[in-house]
Length: 113
Length: 112
Image 1 (cartoon, each protein chain N blue to C red):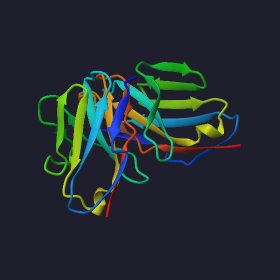
Image 2: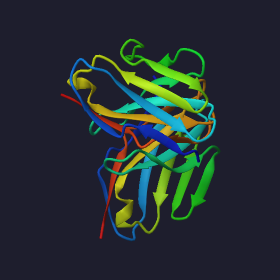
Image 3: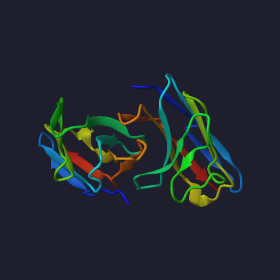
Image 4: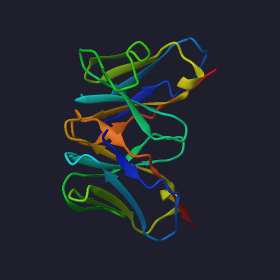
């Protein structure tokens, strides 16, 4: 399986600010995804990060709030913009080679105060 | 809306027993099925994948898939306290562009 490095592992941020989360993979992967996991809940897909083009967002998530970049096949970033306490959550990067197994980074625990 | 349903639990079993976790899915076109284990405060860890009908065994874990019934299960034999975690069922639906849909998870507690 791919080795996935996600940074930062945790952060405490002031409301109204933005945080960029990085996801680095040690090998080229076809698919990269960003998930959110709120306390006590399951995973919700935010968007699919597309290499060289705009991300594909799920219902309820918009580019202005969660801009995503994917400049190549091993790296992606997720920005959480204009944060509010409701954005406090764990954000997870996931990678896969199509319809095969998906693997997760260690997650970023975000607290907005 | 493509859905994945799991018993939320909690499921409690004694050490050494068999733990049985169940999952149903709504999309008949689903093609790939996974079980993840998530310890509190950690990210999900893949423990089993299954793509065709029948059973797949890996050590103490057996995944079972029945596409006709739209049902996938995970059996954990000789359960250990270290198996205590939330188990997430995940499915790649047909035409989903390889996106995983997760169930809400089942919390398993193995009592020594």
